[in-house]
Amino acid sequence: MLKQRPRSTRERTLKKLVREAALTARVQGCGGVVQLLGAYEDADRAYLVMERLRGGDLEAALERGGPLPERAAAAVARDVLRVIAACHAAGCMHGDVKPANFVLREPLATPAALRRRAGAGPEGAASAATPAANPFAALALPGAPLPPPRWLVAIDFGCSQPVGRASLTRRTGTPVYMAPEVFRRDYGPEADLWSAGVMLYQLLSGRFPWWPRVADCRACTVDEVMRAVLSGEVPFDYGPWVGALPSASVAGGHAAPPPVPLSPECQALVRGLLTRDPSRRLDAAAALASPWFASMLGGEEGEEEMAEANNVVPIGSPDHVAAPPMPSPPAPQHHHHHAGAGGSTWFGATGGGVPGGAAAPSGTAMA
Image (cartoon, rainbow, N blue to C red; front, side, top):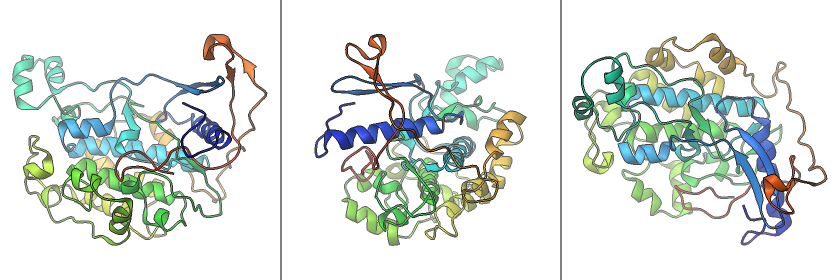
């Protein structure tokens, strides 16, 4: 990443990059966060070295395969909420929760592969039954195993911020996923839960709450998105919310799911996350306690995974242990085999702000 970015000073850009590395390091104890292997710099660039992820991001999966089956959406939502809970317990917020920032570590097994393992016939017959274009289609099959632990990984902590008692005021994130209070410049970690609600709504219906087509949102200005987020009604009277088949314009031309409405538990969770008043919105612990996860996913996870999910307490509670302060960058140490000639390693953070610039309403994050 370049140290000098348009419309920003070199010093300010470097502070943002150092902060991103430090906040990513702060949540490394969560298995659902991308592994940060090192942070290095040379004269012109900074390098954040992370694990290689092979499965693609959720946004690409949604565009390729259409809305997720409800069971698959539950598996995704549970892991997204775990990451949010871990961030909040560590004293920070992710700040840009959206499908593009959650990546599969490895490609999921296709329905055809699962049927072959079960001895149900050749690949051709299975592929005809379920489109292989949707990597989550296999999760809808009766008795299909859940993905392995730590299968979904959060990336891009460029919009993350430490949180405390004082409200945050800087608008950061991707506008269509930003909470109403972020637009009002008076927010806290609860904003991550609104973003998770928009993301879950999108994964289940294939569209954003306020526009019937993704292209309609992308054609909007940031001010138009802000007005929709602040006062637009979130519709639950069409398609998967009532059990109607989505039209090709909504489903993007992909094979439509069966005309069965999403479960009451699912719809209650989405509504609880998309509550405009942050004081009444579900927090991460309450969202993870939703009966939807038990009804969709059962008790198939191990004790270790449950311990990780439940090792979360609200910030400010007597049981909360504050995360240690972020250290200042150490004196540069040259490591030619990592960063090239003249390279150095750094880890820590000073200053404020987040990387990024102006953004499309549903695309790249803004600062």
